[in-house]
Image (cartoon, rainbow, N blue to C red; front, side, top):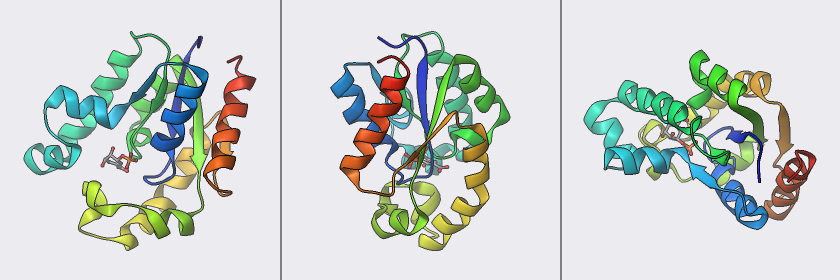
Length: 170
Ligand code: S3P
């Protein structure tokens, strides 16, 4: 049982969803993927949402989803890579949980990120991944309560995130 939400933040391709889902399952805590929640609510994929309604509509849905989540059972929550960009979203996460940065080296992200599922990156390619990384890394670091170095492979990442969760009493 968690006392507060655990928000996983970080770049697209850093491992938020893959590690979060697995660790939450191992520790038997509820898990929410924000992109998936938004897709289910809106009734289309995140890519379709960007195409049909634009990025601002998606960002508004992210904020609304965070607000909704504050009223739900404390869970492990994988945020989208851009959720931290709004100060309001950062305040909601700070006030309702613990924030964990999944910090994966840029070269590793670039070597295996799936661009086709990511509307912000699909057209502009890997150069955009690099640009976003440099634009965002300080924001991610400044808002994180814990930083999990995910540069040593999947299994080390699982252990690292589990250690942080145990530290929080899980
Ligand atoms: C975004 C990241 C995506 C998704 C949307 C916008 C971003 O999530 O929320 O495409 O701005 O970095 P992932 O971090 O899970 O790829």
